Length: 173
Image 1: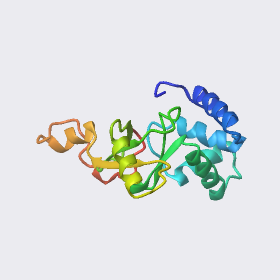
Image 2: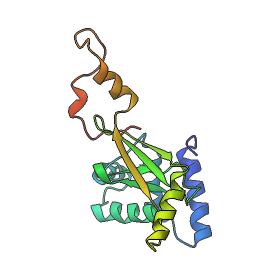
Image 3: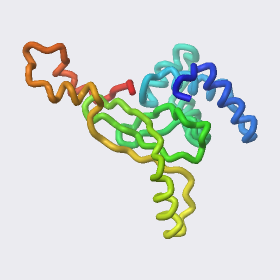
Image 4: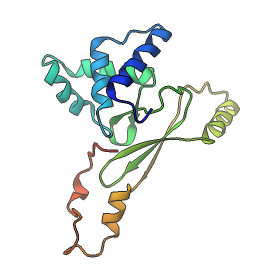
Protein backbone atom coordinates (compact mmCIF):
# COMPACT_ATOMS: atom_id res chain seq x y z
CA UNK A 1 0.00 0.00 0.00
CA UNK A 2 2.95 2.38 0.45
CA UNK A 3 3.17 2.99 -3.31
CA UNK A 4 -0.50 3.95 -3.70
CA UNK A 5 -1.47 7.42 -4.85
CA UNK A 6 -3.74 9.55 -2.69
CA UNK A 7 -6.57 8.85 -5.16
CA UNK A 8 -6.05 5.08 -4.85
CA UNK A 9 -6.01 5.39 -1.05
CA UNK A 10 -9.30 7.32 -1.15
CA UNK A 11 -10.87 4.66 -3.37
CA UNK A 12 -9.69 1.90 -1.00
CA UNK A 13 -10.93 3.82 2.05
CA UNK A 14 -14.32 4.46 0.44
CA UNK A 15 -14.65 0.76 -0.37
CA UNK A 16 -13.76 -0.20 3.22
CA UNK A 17 -16.21 2.34 4.64
CA UNK A 18 -19.01 0.93 2.47
CA UNK A 19 -18.19 -2.59 3.69
CA UNK A 20 -18.25 -1.37 7.31
CA UNK A 21 -21.44 0.64 6.94
CA UNK A 22 -19.82 3.97 7.84
CA UNK A 23 -19.74 7.23 5.86
CA UNK A 24 -16.63 8.77 4.41
CA UNK A 25 -17.98 12.32 4.19
CA UNK A 26 -16.41 14.87 1.87
CA UNK A 27 -14.59 16.54 4.79
CA UNK A 28 -13.29 13.20 6.09
CA UNK A 29 -12.17 12.31 2.57
CA UNK A 30 -10.40 15.65 2.18
CA UNK A 31 -8.54 15.20 5.48
CA UNK A 32 -7.59 11.66 4.41
CA UNK A 33 -6.39 12.99 1.04
CA UNK A 34 -4.24 15.60 2.78
CA UNK A 35 -2.86 12.93 5.12
CA UNK A 36 -2.10 10.64 2.15
CA UNK A 37 -0.10 13.41 0.50
CA UNK A 38 2.06 13.94 3.60
CA UNK A 39 5.52 12.39 3.44
CA UNK A 40 5.36 11.85 7.22
CA UNK A 41 3.54 13.03 10.32
CA UNK A 42 1.60 16.27 10.70
CA UNK A 43 -0.03 18.06 13.62
CA UNK A 44 -3.78 18.69 13.64
CA UNK A 45 -3.23 22.45 13.38
CA UNK A 46 -0.85 22.13 10.43
CA UNK A 47 -3.48 19.90 8.82
CA UNK A 48 -6.12 22.55 9.57
CA UNK A 49 -3.98 25.15 7.77
CA UNK A 50 -3.87 22.91 4.70
CA UNK A 51 -7.60 22.13 4.89
CA UNK A 52 -8.41 25.85 4.97
CA UNK A 53 -7.00 26.20 1.45
CA UNK A 54 -9.97 24.25 0.07
CA UNK A 55 -12.39 24.90 2.97
CA UNK A 56 -11.72 28.39 4.40
CA UNK A 57 -14.46 27.99 7.02
CA UNK A 58 -12.82 24.89 8.58
CA UNK A 59 -12.36 25.05 12.35
CA UNK A 60 -10.35 22.83 14.75
CA UNK A 61 -13.38 20.64 15.63
CA UNK A 62 -13.78 19.88 11.90
CA UNK A 63 -10.27 18.44 11.74
CA UNK A 64 -10.46 16.66 15.08
CA UNK A 65 -13.77 14.97 14.20
CA UNK A 66 -12.32 13.81 10.88
CA UNK A 67 -9.12 12.60 12.57
CA UNK A 68 -11.16 10.69 15.19
CA UNK A 69 -13.11 8.95 12.43
CA UNK A 70 -9.96 8.12 10.44
CA UNK A 71 -8.32 6.76 13.62
CA UNK A 72 -11.38 4.61 14.40
CA UNK A 73 -11.27 3.17 10.90
CA UNK A 74 -7.55 2.45 11.14
CA UNK A 75 -6.64 4.70 8.19
CA UNK A 76 -4.21 6.82 10.23
CA UNK A 77 -2.25 6.58 13.49
CA UNK A 78 -1.70 9.09 16.24
CA UNK A 79 1.93 9.57 17.22
CA UNK A 80 1.47 10.23 20.93
CA UNK A 81 5.00 11.38 21.70
CA UNK A 82 4.95 14.33 19.30
CA UNK A 83 1.18 14.89 19.12
CA UNK A 84 0.93 14.33 15.39
CA UNK A 85 -0.82 12.02 12.96
CA UNK A 86 0.56 9.80 10.23
CA UNK A 87 -1.03 7.88 7.38
CA UNK A 88 -1.31 4.14 8.03
CA UNK A 89 0.24 2.37 5.08
CA UNK A 90 -1.23 -0.96 6.15
CA UNK A 91 -4.89 -0.08 6.69
CA UNK A 92 -5.90 -2.92 4.41
CA UNK A 93 -4.62 -5.22 7.21
CA UNK A 94 -6.68 -3.89 10.16
CA UNK A 95 -5.35 -6.28 12.81
CA UNK A 96 -1.70 -5.27 12.47
CA UNK A 97 0.45 -3.82 15.22
CA UNK A 98 2.38 -0.76 14.14
CA UNK A 99 5.78 0.38 15.28
CA UNK A 100 6.30 4.11 14.87
CA UNK A 101 10.00 4.90 14.51
CA UNK A 102 10.26 8.52 15.67
CA UNK A 103 13.44 10.51 15.03
CA UNK A 104 14.38 12.51 18.11
CA UNK A 105 16.25 15.07 16.03
CA UNK A 106 13.91 15.91 13.13
CA UNK A 107 10.69 14.19 14.32
CA UNK A 108 10.33 12.13 11.14
CA UNK A 109 8.00 9.16 11.65
CA UNK A 110 8.22 5.85 9.80
CA UNK A 111 5.61 3.13 10.28
CA UNK A 112 6.60 -0.53 10.21
CA UNK A 113 4.51 -3.61 10.92
CA UNK A 114 5.54 -5.44 14.08
CA UNK A 115 5.45 -9.02 12.85
CA UNK A 116 5.73 -11.40 15.78
CA UNK A 117 5.11 -8.76 18.42
CA UNK A 118 1.36 -9.04 17.85
CA UNK A 119 1.27 -12.55 19.33
CA UNK A 120 3.17 -11.45 22.45
CA UNK A 121 0.84 -8.50 22.99
CA UNK A 122 -2.24 -10.70 22.44
CA UNK A 123 -0.93 -13.21 24.95
CA UNK A 124 -0.27 -10.52 27.55
CA UNK A 125 -3.71 -9.01 26.94
CA UNK A 126 -5.32 -12.44 27.28
CA UNK A 127 -3.52 -13.09 30.56
CA UNK A 128 -4.89 -9.80 31.89
CA UNK A 129 -8.37 -10.55 30.47
CA UNK A 130 -7.99 -7.35 28.47
CA UNK A 131 -9.99 -6.92 25.25
CA UNK A 132 -7.32 -5.61 22.88
CA UNK A 133 -8.54 -3.36 20.07
CA UNK A 134 -5.32 -2.13 18.53
CA UNK A 135 -1.75 -1.43 19.50
CA UNK A 136 0.87 1.05 18.42
CA UNK A 137 4.44 0.95 19.64
CA UNK A 138 6.61 4.06 19.50
CA UNK A 139 10.37 3.74 19.37
CA UNK A 140 12.69 6.74 19.48
CA UNK A 141 16.11 7.17 17.96
CA UNK A 142 17.65 8.78 14.89
CA UNK A 143 16.63 8.39 11.25
CA UNK A 144 19.37 7.60 8.73
CA UNK A 145 19.95 11.26 7.81
CA UNK A 146 20.07 12.52 11.40
CA UNK A 147 22.36 9.67 12.46
CA UNK A 148 24.77 10.73 9.70
CA UNK A 149 24.62 14.37 10.83
CA UNK A 150 25.25 13.46 14.47
CA UNK A 151 28.14 11.17 13.52
CA UNK A 152 29.75 13.90 11.41
CA UNK A 153 32.96 15.32 12.84
CA UNK A 154 33.74 17.76 9.99
CA UNK A 155 31.20 20.49 10.74
CA UNK A 156 33.18 23.14 8.85
CA UNK A 157 33.57 21.19 5.59
CA UNK A 158 30.44 19.02 5.29
CA UNK A 159 27.07 19.57 3.62
CA UNK A 160 25.00 18.73 6.72
CA UNK A 161 22.72 21.23 8.42
CA UNK A 162 24.01 21.00 11.97
CA UNK A 163 21.57 23.73 13.06
CA UNK A 164 18.60 21.48 12.21
CA UNK A 165 18.52 19.91 15.68
CA UNK A 166 15.97 22.42 16.98
CA UNK A 167 13.41 21.53 14.30
CA UNK A 168 11.43 18.94 16.25
CA UNK A 169 8.22 19.14 14.20
CA UNK A 170 9.41 17.20 11.17
CA UNK A 171 6.90 16.23 8.55
CA UNK A 172 8.78 13.66 6.56
CA UNK A 173 9.08 9.95 7.01
